Length: 422
Image (cartoon, rainbow, N blue to C red; front, top):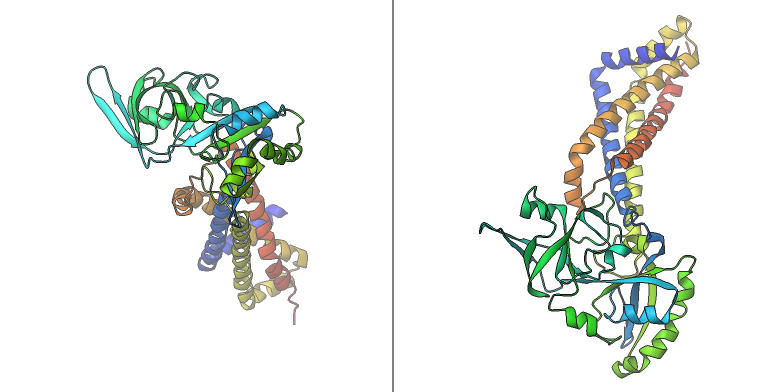
């Protein structure tokens, strides 16, 4: 029986091609807007979800107060990580990250044995502790993450950089020249190559340099101040079962013991707090971080726009269908004279709505694939999703399309089927 309803609905849609096209096009536009915004929102909520020990990893940040003004910063002095580890047994591991802050671009240069030279500028370079890849999960395709930055003058690069420099040859063990305004001009051995994860990260690094071997080695390793040189992104991994709030409550005592005199001499105050790794992008109290943080408020606004756009498309569909009621009333009258029941007519009109909604959905899915790179450029994000994530999202969208078809067609179906014979 339902198959017959669909056949009747399909024939009616083919008979009124202009009307069908307008309705399908309107619904498709609504789906496209909703899908693109949903993909963006999903991307924003996917930050740093792939790290194995992410639930126990926190970024250390400080609030500095001076002259009645306070500012939250995600960076602390170099010596802070080691001092915290000595004072708090709750901390299992620490790592530090330092951006090449004076470099807009860093020159990477490789001289092949035959004399050919390959050089280019790169961005998003960082100096990192040897423990960095123990703290964070990266997909290494060459090298061992546990020891990648343990030796002096070692560098870990993305797969893209390795291919640009060496083509299809292995990059592991090859020596390159890294010329940095921040860290000097030195030779580094490639100790690892990683492929960026599908899930985004607030750390957008394209290459990591070891602390040892550059101009900043002595500054990083021998610095003892806990007040000055607040330049290091510092991360703590707590032991199993440790409550981060209980650790935060001990920070005032730590500040009083190690920093109070220096802070008083500067006429300032400080307090520390921890941000869970998975919350850094959306829940951060700082205006700046390794990468600019997102905004949950804007996500709510975008979600409202997506829902509103889809509702407008549904309302337009209902208005168009209802506007044809005078023409469809003759059809309804004839079918009722021939013995058609109201529920049969309801199913027919709902079938038309569902067919148009599903056609609009499939057109929208195809167009979204083409529009996603452009949308990503406009949004300033590289929105890429793993296959399993895409399947889940598009199945959810398919359910939305089905519900949209029912919602959009419900009023016309019940309205038109309620016509009574004169």
